[in-house]
Length: 113
Figure 1 (cartoon, helix red, strand yellow):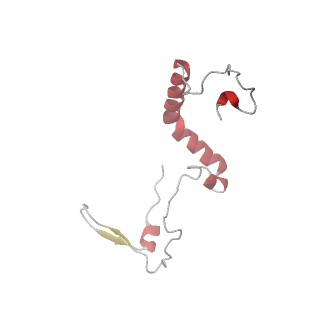
Figure 2: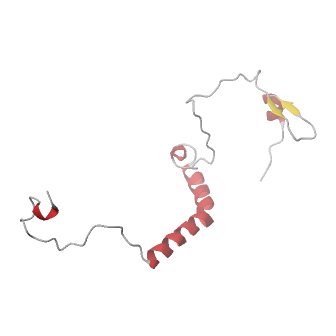
Figure 3: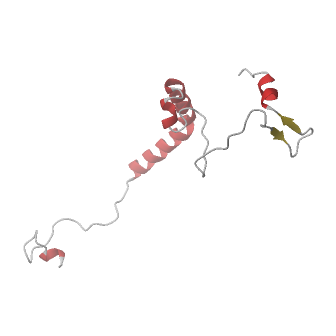
């Protein structure tokens, strides 16, 4: 069935609507999109902090970066490690490799920003 003989249009009629094709974007729209993207890069971090401070960690967990800390897993679960068995090892290109326990970490001074 051709478009000219469709059930909604009498046979032999010609459509007056333009052909459907790629939609053109004007210069004004293009420059506006560039400006919005640049504003997102320039002010995105500040906006994220404002949302995190206003919403907190409750509802903020639903918003991207609302609680400012996010971790991902591909297994759907996390290992459970007791405090007595937990060890943080600092190794690699360091002058003094360290192995710290939870008590060692909690006894460290809290930095003030």
